[in-house]
Image (cartoon, rainbow, N blue to C red; front, top):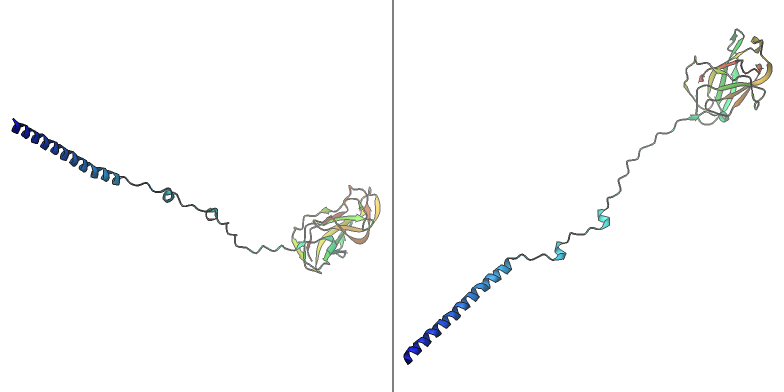
Length: 216
């Protein structure tokens, strides 16, 4: 009986030892698995490493556009002739017909710079250099084409001026005129030429006709 109990005790002790060994083995086997699982998880990058590189405002701003290559501006041509730089004369040797007198109205550049005459002058008979026009101003004769006349200093341009005798008009209210007030093209100031003639104060009578300026 005693030997049987001893054997039973040994069997239980052996079984208990085996159970301890079995549990120890399972514990050791699970540890590497846990360790491997932890190492397989990728580590999150640090906030500093993941942030996008910063760029200063000076680096991101676009440079100003390059200026286009400079070009030489076209030089302005000669100015329009003005009365302050002109001298006016007339040449009435052109003759006449049917009660009319043809003359050349001459404007000479008295300035130091070239200038341009282009178009028709305004012409009126007047009592003096500052007087009001007497009768109608000259009408335009478009038989001569308009051209650009370049006047170097001392050079002149001419326009054909026709004066019809006041005596040709029975209803003319005759008034003595001292000469012509002449307005160059595109000018509101005038020059005066002494040339005594009879004018008609009636504005409905056209005594004067003038053409466009031509080179002399």
